[in-house]
Image (tube, rainbow, N blue to C red; front, side):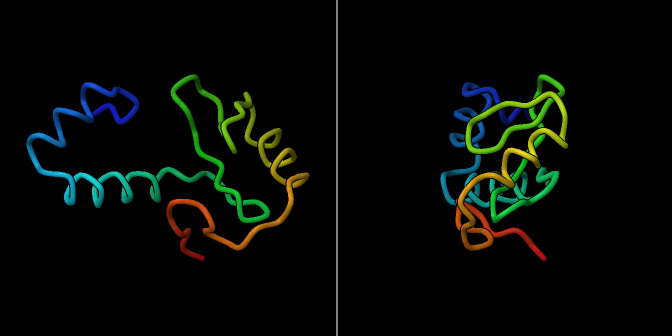
Length: 84
C-alpha cells in the first residue's frame, strides 16, 4: 500500500470502508513518526527526507532544528497523539 498515492487510498476506502481506513491510516501515521519536537511530529517522506508542518528537509536534524523554533504546542495536538 502506497499511502502517498491518492488512487491507492481511494481503492482501500472502497474495499474496507471509511472507519477501517481511518484506523489503518492513523496506525500507519503513528508508526512513521521519526521524532517529536515541541509537540510537532516529524515524519519521513518518500524523497528520503523529513517533513514537519508541511516543510520538507533533507536531514532529520534540520527538521528537528526547525521544529524547535516553532511555538510549542501540546503533545499530540495534531491529528494523532504520539505515544510517550
